[in-house]
Image (cartoon, rainbow, N blue to C red; front, side, top):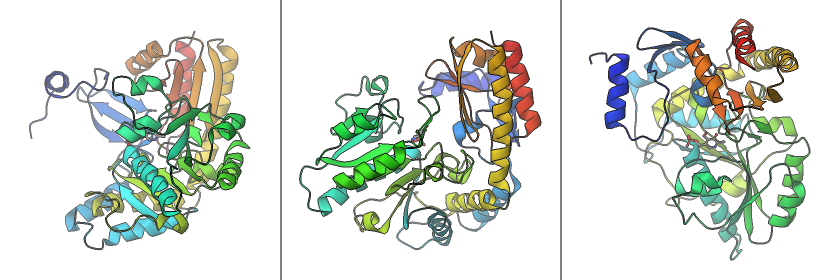
Length: 397
Ligand SMILES: Cc1ncc(COP(=O)(O)O)c(C=O)c1O
């Protein structure tokens, strides 16, 4: 394949790719660790990390080695047969989480679709009639497929696609009284991100998730955690719910689970998982050997001695540096940080800052209009964090 120039890539994209993204005028073609290069040879420090996908950074030897090895042996076979790589990843997941069983798919939205279907099916199997409602949070994000979009508590994301899937009720995040009012005998589940990501990096309050657990138990509803963004070591623990001394019935994962190879997973307890029997749900690519071999390499790396402690240490360094920054810049309204999931809420529009950072060789993201969001590879170094913070110091009003 002939390598296209940066301009050719931009032009061809404009001509041939549906315009669902407002893209920066940069085509990234190579990466190593936390650095990426564009087609013009320019280097950037990556604090977007594929939006929480590149947990191990770019070109991590364990991940690349596992993908190469598996690609040479077997890329795909049907789920009509047993798949060794799938069994191995499932075992690693269940032995390190609350869950007993895993269903594999290909993305976060699909994992949430599976969770929504499973919650409805469990209610049916328990003989509950008219019990299909799901309470979700305002400012949440669960994906772009029809049911995941409908679960998402942001009206601007529904606009133009109505009627949305019925049965979703949105309550303010971290507001237990509102959840108590919304959860009724018709509620089959409560769906919540332990740390809201797209919504602007908002962690659940310490007492909120345990209280939702109690509420769900009282009402006979399931508790679903969407850890698509905040799972897989992002918060300094393998799963974000571990910070809360509580556990869900169902949890969804995707993004960094296979370090950039498309994958999604829905984990559940046996009591719940048994409602999915042959013929109730499926995915052609779900749990394929290539994706699962990548997922196993990611899991083994995260579980290796000292890895998550390292994430926590770098989070402390990042936090200390950002607190200094906040003290110097009145344009910073609030800092919210869990591990290496970082939101810096500004009093001003964040978009110009993102462009200025790009011009200086830093990839950062802005969500909700004014929240600068940093989701670097978990292997980011203190020195790389310092380079970003020093640049923000020069740019912020
Ligand atoms: C919490 C959460 N859930 C679900 C999704 C959807 O994942 P995907 O884009 O892989 O469908 C996202 C994506 O940003 C997310 O952050």
